Image (cartoon, rainbow, N blue to C red; front, top):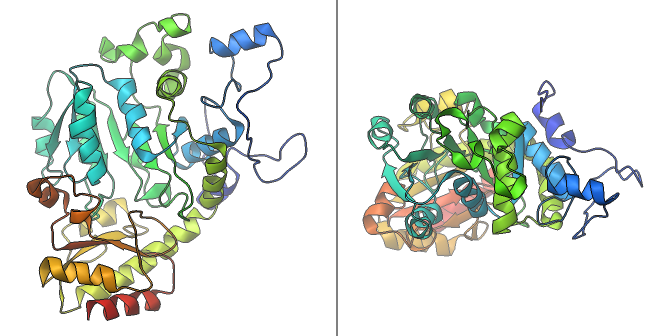
Length: 426
């Protein structure tokens, strides 16, 4: 499955995977609101169910609207294939389930969204999967944590909540050395600001709910297969390298080559877990993707100006934004994010927790919600909400201290955002 990426990003964000609907000529991708599809004959149906032909079977697995979205995100990430699902958490569930078996081990950055940390330490632990969290600022910790049964490494490009940046190339080098796939959550950066595959990632996940949709209307997630990992080597990943009894004993990695992992996720894992993306949500997300480049440019432009303002505010003790020259991730930001370091960052207030609560409760333009990546500017106190399930020690490691507020800067007039924050801080 070879693809060309010669067209510009904005062009691909509008056109990739789509064409006028062949029956009516409808130019926009329709919502195919159907559960099932009529087969040509029994032989056609059998070939589809045996994965000997590509087509639509049942909307839990395949749907034309969802397929366009999968093709588009795969194209923007310069990868071979993708599998859309119901949420970002579902994307992680699908990717991990396709790779891990009982008593397997994986490594993750400790600078993650609180829900991911909880998923890894609670739910995934119940599956017999053990996670070791490491400090991504010390790359050696990734290598030191590797065991014989380590099956993957997981990081975020821009961490939630504080926008910390991992040296992805260095982590990818370690993963390659030990033949372990590197999974990168690219949600906060989006493929407009950063392509993890360019730096050695093997699998990419997104919460499509955030910037890619961009308007706060639809939940969705996606798993992207970069097509650059050899799952046949050493028989380390039997679910991909050994015969699958569900599909006439095919070997996914052998049969489908550089999109074998995506096929495993779709045909096997998504089939059994059932975390399907609805065609209506896929439609809304597709419309969001079309303006991704325009929105991300405005998001990052506004975020830098707001961060610069807050960095000079006497009531603010720290602004954790890699776009600031004073930030410890500034050099990594220049390396990996030449078009801007995203729109999510945290601030610390000198008067601590009470000042944070006052700020959150006194803004008028910013919305106090648990989402990020909306066109609107958003605010929340992570320690008491998104990261509340963590211990105090885990909160600090994740960048969600009690005196921290997370901001998701929208695309409003930046002067209005600054004025609202200035009023609320006062």
